[in-house]
Image (cartoon, rainbow, N blue to C red; front, side):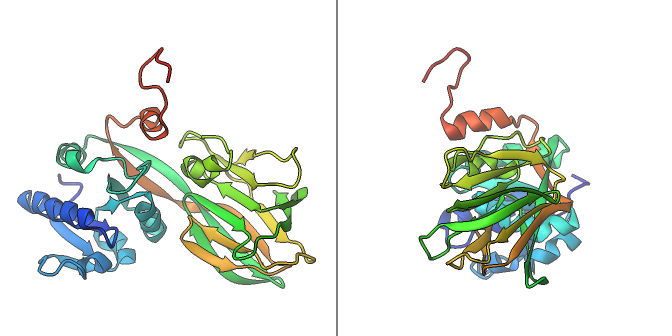
Length: 295
């Protein structure tokens, strides 16, 4: 356990089951003489915890490992906070699907013993840097692990925008928006919009139109190092919005440009040694569970 002496704990707020699992986790780690550091926001709803506390963004500076208890959304938020520090992250599922938080809560002790003893796999996931410009000047920067989505916001009218890949014009599109997804996000919103499932090791981005005004518009897969640029048409009648991982939102105006490129820092996601991406797909997406079995 020498590699992981200082362990940060992050939990989804507003869930009794998350608090219960965190309490079990603290006892488990204390019994093994490990130093526990609680995320400040979750510590505030756990009076009497008796542990060291820090802000989530600081965990990467003082911790050797961060454990997230919650759903995939909780891990997405943690990934954006911790990506700069390169701290490895492990997820215990107290949410719904659990593509990222893949350790079941009833099984966490056995799995965590494996990880703490060095029996784990490292999954490197890239994130996206998103820059929004208005009149040529930057007005916001955002980060995404799953996806960046241009959508109508509060309006119900279509958006018109231009798409460029590596400076080359692709098309002008009228649609409800566009999803730009990493392989990590391909099993999330992009999947429900008709995009492909991409293995996490693939270095690619998928662009999935949302209800395009032409039947010939289909998802496009491009190299992961591509620079993407979307420009909201000047004559667009509405003010659309942009969101990252469904958690960060910003209003856009006609003429705004959105540039998306791969972030230099990656998320180090840890899994127990028996982790299997395709098994996760079978379990979460209802695929047949045995060779030759038909649903």
